[in-house]
Length: 248
Image (cartoon, rainbow, N blue to C red; front, side, top):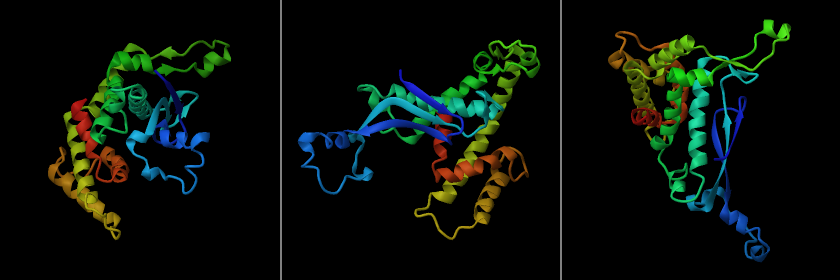
C-alpha cells in the first residue's frame, strides 16, 4: 500500500507526507514570472490544494529498546498509531478513497481506525503474533542467538484479558466519559480564560468523579489522573475518543 516509518523516539502522533499542487505548479518555468511577489501562506491553501502521498511517519512516546516494547502501554500506542497510518496510506489513492482521508473527515471518524487497531491487543491470537521475546542474555552468552520467540499462549490470554478490563470495559468507558465531560466544561468556552488556575481543573474533575464515578466517594483513579494531560491537550475534543470507542 505504501511506506510507514516508525520512530520510537520521535514524539507523539502520525504524520502524512503531502505537497501542494499550487506550490509545485508555481515552480514551473512557464509560470515563474507570473507568481513572483508575496508567497502564498499555508493558511491560504484549501483541502483541494494538497496532494496526499502514501507515506507516513509514526512517532512514539513510550520507551522501546532494540525493537522491543518495555510495557503493554507501548504496544497499545504502536497499534493506535498504526491504525492512523494504515488509514492515511489507504486514503492516499485516487477517488473516492481520498474523500475518506485526514483532510476531509471529522475528528470522531478519524479516531475509529486507531481504536479498531487497539482491539488487536485484546485478542490473544493477535497479541501472541505481535509480541515477541528477545533472546535472553544467557542464550547469547552460550552463542544461541536465534529468531525472537513469540509469546506463549497462556501469557497472551492473560494479558489480553487484562487489556480488555483496562481499555474495553463498561467501567473504563464510564471513566472516559467523565474525562470528556470535564474537558468540555473546562475548554469549550471560547476563548479559554487566560486567568485559569490549576485548582479550577482539579475542582471540575473532582466534582465529576465524586458525583458520577463508578467507585463511590473516590475523587479519581490513577489511570484517569494520567489521562488528564491528554485531555487538556485536546482542548474540548477528547469526546471524539468516546465516540470512536462506540463505533469500534
